[in-house]
Length: 449
Image 1 (cartoon, rainbow, N blue to C red):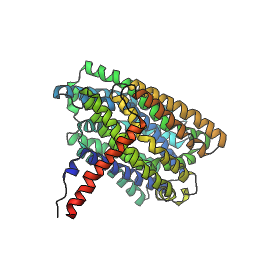
Image 2: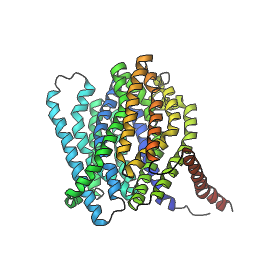
Image 3: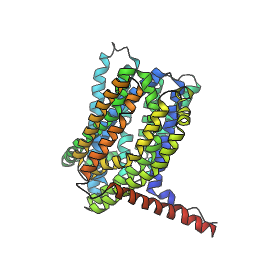
Image 4: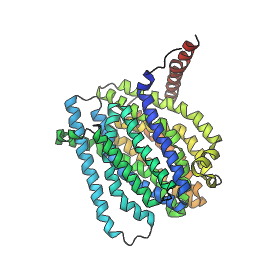
């Protein structure tokens, strides 16, 4: 009997997929527990907090995550330390600014009666600070393509959070305030692990240079604008629903959004490995390899998402019931999930259009792309919700946003590299066939013989 192929465990795509799979599964389970243990108002408040917290993540990730990968991946040792030190300096300054702003607002929150808003303001600064080391470490590990440490850190972060939620439920102490507290503590634990095991590379902060800081900032200002716009793009639906229909509608709408983790698992994995590969190729001025990686990953994921979309369309009711409970099955959530999964077939091309523009030093074009999507999303959201006056008004506006993003992104990228939609599909199909033949079919033939 042939021995197990250990090379699979060292494959970066496999490790990235496993890491994203673990955090996504944990996230889905965690959300399921929260939906079942809190009422709709508190669930909506929790999502409001996550939306506000997402703004700080958008600031840091937009400003520095792509810049870290672009300037650090494949760099010489001295240059690498200079880049990482400059990244740490900028991330620390940015985080400290956010924390000080939040602490300055807290004394004036006494008149706020909305528990969700008050809790978000109270915990925003502390939570943002607690996640700083973990966030920077993650950028570095992705650039280094060290996916085993990423896997362990995700286990620490997601595993401790879901364990905390279970403990709160068992001890009958589950509440919004306790949930926010334990979220902060799990971030502290993960960040501490980054320091203790030497993954953070924090001492490189003393190797920073003003020249490199300026270089990162000049690049990051466009990717920052893109990230903030992208965050607003994903947040406007929640904000508009909350304003017109209340937190109950937010809870219903976020159920299918959370189930989209099925798509985000492979998408985040391939985007992460694809970005590092394209960054190395671009730094070597190999645009042919950049184009190959883009077409390969976007095409493969498009074909993978087709059967996933079909299965999700059939089993939408079951998926909603498993995550949120039977009380949500007869709401708009299942049909919205079906719509989102059909749209997901076009996600890979849209996502890789954006990250490729960033990698080839065209973040300005990616920013314009996201701005167009944001304008389309806001306008169609308002038209939809004012027309039908229910959640479907917001949901059915989403395809227009996606179509706008794919068209604008493709127009911008095709000025830099040559490709066609049919070429992406053809390349992706060939890569899928090759992967299945080499990793599945051939080993089965060898085993049978």
